[in-house]
Length: 206
Image (cartoon, rainbow, N blue to C red; front, side):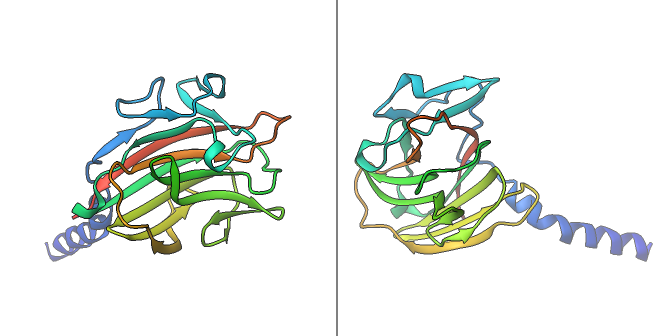
C-alpha cells in the first residue's frame, strides 16, 4: 500500500507542470483551411498567401518595415490589465539566403513595429533575434510573454523540449489599438520561399 501511495504522489508531482501548461488558450488558431475571426491582412497581396493541404502558407516577399506585405494582424489584449503569452509555431522548409531574411512575431502600434521576435538570417547564419541566439532546423516554436511594458521572449525547435530564453526587454508606452502580428521580411525577388504557419495561441496569465 505504501508503495502505491508513493507512486501516485510521484506521478502527480511529475504531471503538475504538464497540467499547468495545458490551460485553455484565450485564443487559438491552427490555420487549418481558413483564418479564425479577428485576423486581418495589412498591405495584402492576395497572391502571397494560400492554404495548401489545410496549412496557411505566406510568401516571403522582398520588402520590410513599412513596406512589408501580407502582415497578418489581430487585436492584442490590453497589456495594462495583466500578463499574456503569445505562442507561434511555424516551419520554413527552405534554406535562408538573403541577409536579414526573417519571420516571426511583431508587436504593432498602428502600422509601425514596436517590437519583433523573429527567426533571422544574419551574415550567413540563422538566429532568433533579438538575443541573437544561434538556431538550427526548419521548425521553430516562439513564445512572447507581455506584462505591461515588460517582455520576455523564448523559443525551442522541438515541441517536446522546454522553452529557452532569448531576450528580455520593454515595449514602448501603451498605445490604443495595439496589435500582435506575424510578418515575413527580406525575401528574395527571384525565389519563392513559403512559410508554413502551424499554430498560434494566446494565454491569459494568472
